Image (cartoon, rainbow, N blue to C red; front, side, top):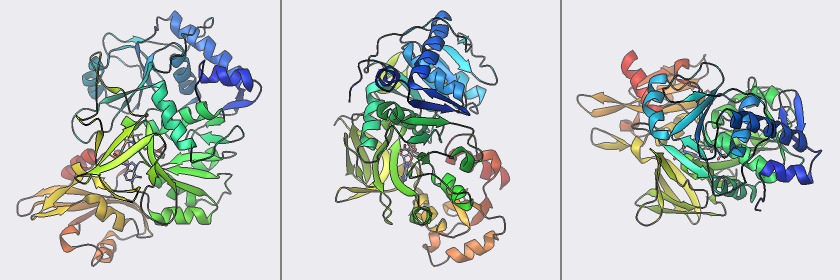
Length: 452
Ligand code: 4YB
């Protein structure tokens, strides 16, 4: 489907009085949504936001952030949604190369020279033309080394991402997708663009507790740990479909969800690809399914390569868009994978592979076994330096308080090779949950070095 106007204007023409967006307790129709966006876009334009400018939107998900994202699109801005928990020192290094002129922040102001603060004031309506090839968003990658990069996507790429997912999952006008993952991550933006493509309903609410936020929602995107926590609660759910992703998805998890009547979809996605690349209905097998329409996947020397209409135009660097495809026109992901027929299985990140006494350890391979323990929700295997072995594996787990970790070490014996057995077991500390959807392995390693 191609839009002639901004998607919300399109839906306001044909579904004017139908519900579009639930913001906390307030419900907006497509017509009301258009009015709110017009006024906000007018306010931003009045404050000097022009087409093509880079604008920081620093917030955790909230109604204002969603309205601001849409209004900035209507101003033709190149939006950089930011995790409010990113440290100021990192932003000072990062932002100068991202050509940012304004920042809208909820919470602490952003003090980086040359960036003007924006306020949520209303003005008389404003819009640029809808141009699907305009660069609309910059999303930071969660690279394992160095500074994050900003993958820049056009509206076309976001809509191509949405179309691929909606070719397999049904989501229509009478469905509500909870904005259950942050807009500063592609998984949150994926929800928003699917909502805009389908003209369904999106729900923006405080996510704690998740079971309350989900009331009345038919769809959600979750990382595996969120679904584990949800399944522990007793509340009945209206949830029909859950799209899982972001990390390895244990089959035990999808089976437990299925028993509670939740249909699970296993997805594999990346920032550069504007979220989901492969997906399948959970079927008790550990693969992530086939490439969705509009994507091609191949494996070269164990590495997953992707070609897709949802691929970012490039990484933004001081006003230029640096291409991210290799000389053969593919995006090489740094993920290790195998194709069985057309179905892809992800083995882990090539960058996570380390050597211990000459033996290669792919941490995700060991983690997959640890999380099959019924008291474990999440596990990480991280290398620590060792004079004799070069590096040795240490396990960091999120597990039931009552679980004695030494029993876990015992339980693992015989389930993985001896060189893969972690030499220490630690509990995941709260300080490493930084508002994002993933725990950073770099931060984990630094933390282990501090506490060891
Ligand atoms: C995986 C993986 C998998 C990613 N097995 N490793 O809309 C969605 O698709 C969605 C729904 C729910 C939760 C998350 C999502 C996402 O978009 C996730 C996108 C993402 O994680 N992007 S990322 O750039 O932060 O990380 C990408 C990396 O994550 C990949 O390169 C893989 O290493 C890993 N990953 N899905 C195993 N199913």
